[in-house]
Length: 218
Image 1 (cartoon, helix red, strand yellow):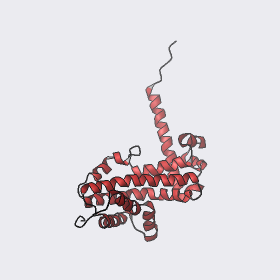
Image 2: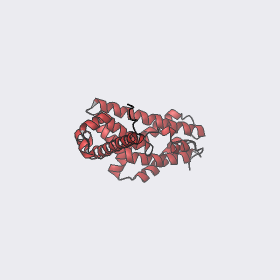
Image 3: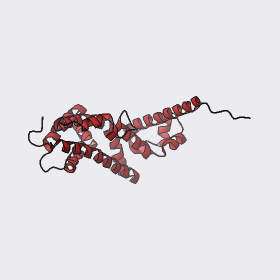
């Protein structure tokens, strides 16, 4: 007797359910991490808010560190969480801009939007890193990723010929990495009340003056 073939729609249905479950877990974790921080946000609490079992959370992600890392990366990549930034159309178009001042303007506005999403999550990583070695490792990993991405911006600026004399792409990347940081964004937002739009304008002006040669600014 021939075995019935599995119907394709059943597989698609299961895949859809799995995607919905994963999205529910990430949404619950995102809210909880932002509201309660690292220590108070347990797997059991995430599961309860997502409407699933703790075993489902563990089987999907393994641990809290992986969930938080996934959330940070998704916040950076926005609408295309599976696509690295250096392959996304928006960043690629920005890096192809031939005018260095306009390039920095595009970058500053875009990174301000990214930071408004990711800075609260990076604050969770940073606070947890003081007592958790695995989270300390994640904090370093995420900042190393920032540096790699921002080196691409600095190298694009160097290709325009607009950098200050004797300023290397690596040196420019260091400056961008420091100024366009989630920590500085959080400080300016929480203490000074600076909006993401105002942060972007400040960052553009600061980077133009710090990085570009005479006559290359707007």
